Length: 371
Image (cartoon, rainbow, N blue to C red):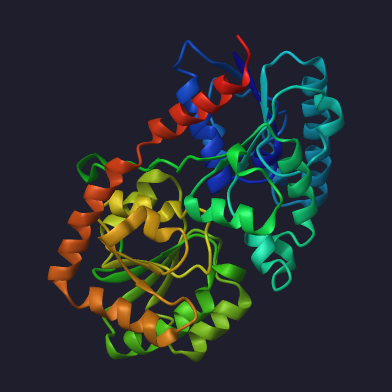
């Protein structure tokens, strides 16, 4: 059996949860004899694919931020994927994002769609950049799909709320823990503050960073030895820098780039608490990453996070600054609670092995291929 993956999640992104998800699937299957696959990709700067034997793409790092170049190479990748789809030397097609460019070429080949979230449906009007208008594309794909993989029960609930789709098509397959506990004895130590609150990833739109920062300001004013580290997501923009200066917290708020898994592993391991204030996530992979590295978690209530962390996290209402502040303070100033959350986190992590995600996904593929 052969699976064909396309270029979509790998063209213009160096990192990201979706490209990491598909990379990890392929990385597992590359060591199995019962499944073959191909990634139809010509041009990419995706870091996960660096030095992987299953991708023969060409990098274009000097032009990575050039929108014209990215647009042109994305079109080249699409044409290359269409050629592979048209040739038909595969048993199942699993596109890596929601564009429907391939539908006319696909014929009757089995189609699997992974649904990561319903952000564009819930917040598309408020944040058009999330994909306002994407709903119609998703509906076309759901109608054509032979199987739909949902990364959480919360996402499945959202699919059924916003789309017309047969529930029997949907298979919930949680993501796995891709970031193992870092062995700090063999890893160069980062120069970090002794005590800090950690925020990881993008800070725009539904990530709710501005409200989180507002909740944190009085804590940082009262405790000048405590810091905030924002890891990844790009350096602070003008608006964020202005807010930090106005709060007089230039010495306590730090941006830290993420260079590799070792970097982010250390950031989690040495933090007092990891805060995930996002309004919604389809799964919330950073929670698994934090727990696997012994970092206490404080997160938004009522999204997919409780499926992952269970009682190994404290939860707050995402739009309530007082609730966010109170939850952070509870963990930062209670070492007993920190230890309790760490231990509970370690107990949760084995429930989400990366191998299970690949194994259950392979079962979906096999069910679609006639003997």
